[in-house]
Length: 375
Image 1: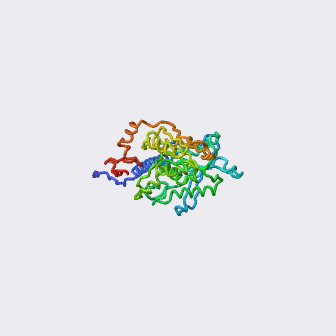
Image 2 (image 1 turned 60 degrees about the vertical axis):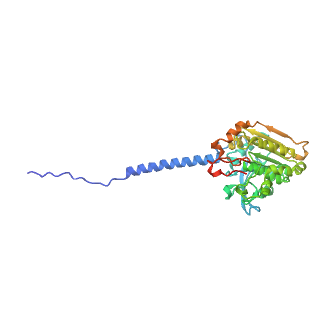
Image 3 (image 1 turned 180 degrees about the vertical axis):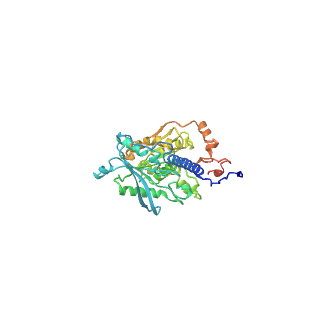
């Protein structure tokens, strides 16, 4: 019996998406891991600026870093500041000991804890106190950020807010909360970049509050930009340390003032500016030290000079500058030759990034966002 041939039946089974799902899951995991790693790297760089997280050496007592919230009468809102308390502060304070204070101003778009994370100032203070190179002191960093004018306050009383008065609010709150010496000879004001300008400007306006001023890569003249947009010439001059020094000469000679000014050798600020300002400040009666150190306008420079600035402030604290027999003008390091500095300044890749150009400087046309000439 013959059987008719039939083609084999083909069963069409639905294709399982397992392989596709595995591939997709692997791709998502790979992207997520890479994205997370990129985010963590970027965040870590933003916090530490390429340096390893600071660590106090073994065997060195550590100070305490905290954050304080308080009401600012100048800004009419609740604000914060960071504070470093030296090792053994609580015990010493309980026994009646008082401490000097160095206030430090940050720059936009920086953050107050940059001094601790990128600058490692807490760990350097721990080491220097342990080695008895500096006196135990408080370090206070006001939180001076704003949502206006690209986070720029200039640490002055402007349309961005009364940030000069805010610094004085911080001083009053610190003296109220902590065991500090409530006298100018044990208060110093320092800052980096815009904070360095702010430290000089505030100190000159409030010589009865601070006896020590430090400018880390700061500048000495104000321009009608950011919070000073639309400001009058009188307002700009009143907030230009170079113009204020001659007006405060009598008060400087009467009260005394000590200042440390420095910048990197490849900073955008012309070396003659810091030399000229140092000489003017010294002529007014201040004890002035200034210097040029390897580096630019960045944390590599500021971190390296933290110990020098802490030692200088510590040596000056507790001694009234009025008792000094004569003021001193001292320089450390050497600036680059003007021709070399000029070539660096006019490098096309760096020229557009200049934040505070010298008078007469004009941004080239390819700096579209900065083409407006400076005043």
